[in-house]
Image 1 (tube, rainbow, N blue to C red):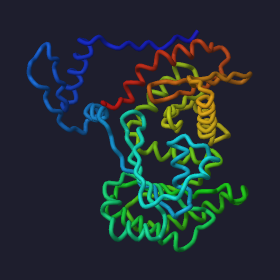
Image 2: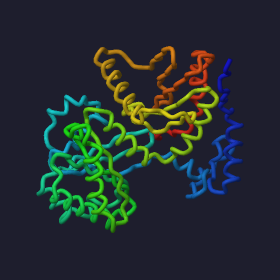
Image 3: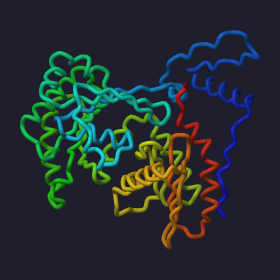
Image 4: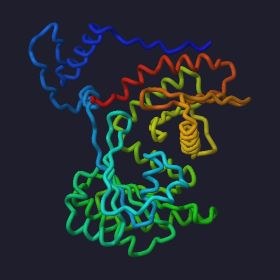
Length: 364
């Protein structure tokens, strides 16, 4: 039988010794001594580019400025409400147009705060953004999400995007740019791929002389493409995804599972995953699961029930979906019938403290 992972939290004295040893090896962080051993005030941390110093800095709150822009009626506020405010797609019809700039702060993975600037898309507002508020809007931007309505993709819209990209290139040249070609459900299914490639080519042509990097996605609030796009957007902001994926890969091997996926527990966006190397025919499977589980969770809430997890089993595989750390959920897929479900559950429970330490919490 598969043995559970044995993860033990060190005693306080042992833990302090490990921290001090780590500090000496990294040569970057002075860990404060306890009040019982010294009356001195804790030394200030010195900035460092070493892995140990980087991990220590992840303990503090990280704030990321995210611009959400696009023409009025393109669907910006609708997608924000579905992803971050638990709206159903059918409920977005009652949302009113954004006036000027709407500010909201979203806590993601505990210590990552996304400061969303939802910018109204009327022409007068854009003139104001580019002429009078240029520095205020485009300074210190981590990421721009620009939304095009696929049905109203005109030359004037491209010109407007080009002006925004130039302003971003001037004030935040290191910012990432994600362009969502939205409302793709309105395009005939057999034509979607061709239409998307054509629009993507025109967008890339607009920015080929700029420093900003642009990535395009098709999207619709009525299917999983919205979750796919926003999972990639958020993935680019999470600082330690490589570390998470390395540990998930180890966990996948220990469990003997086919696939392990880590979701953020509020939005159900995918933040990390690993697989055993098998080819899967459905490349959108994670986003479909995100959509299904989030809708089920909302249904549980309406019934005044709490969602903690589920197990789905058939003749080909067993799928476990559990609340994992304080801000993530985990999905484990196992096709080996010799592996008992109870052993997988033991491994999930045993791994929780370890993964909790990899996703630091905000210090309130």
